[in-house]
Image 1 (cartoon, rainbow, N blue to C red):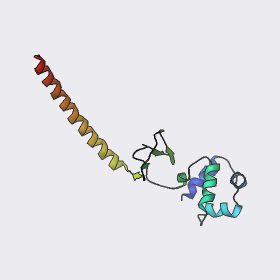
Image 2: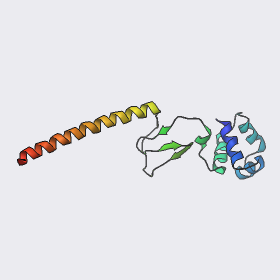
Image 3: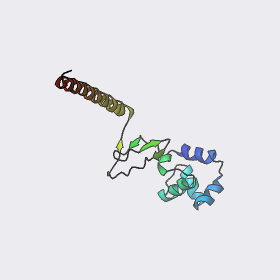
Image 4: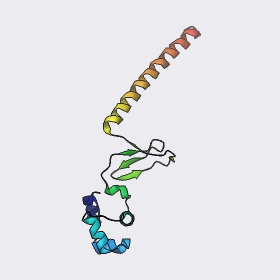
Length: 130
């Protein structure tokens, strides 16, 4: 867990520990344990995330997660969903190099399809007698 992200978010929202405790209902020792990087209950972190209006994943340094069917992506620690339901059973971690390779492959396929379309147009014109 990235404690600096948590502390930065609390500071950015100008919240005191007392305000976080009041908003979440967790104890002072529990909040201190989290902020010190000690063991903590996930349920307490969920309460803090809810109180600060972020997803729990915001507090973790993770690769970009892409759900293949739902086309979700992570933007500044929050999952952005485009409204398409995802029924796949996992996530695919995708880095920049993998995305660049996919783009290159798709560009090649598009070029091949464009060439084939041109060939078919020529054939159609030949058959029409032009």
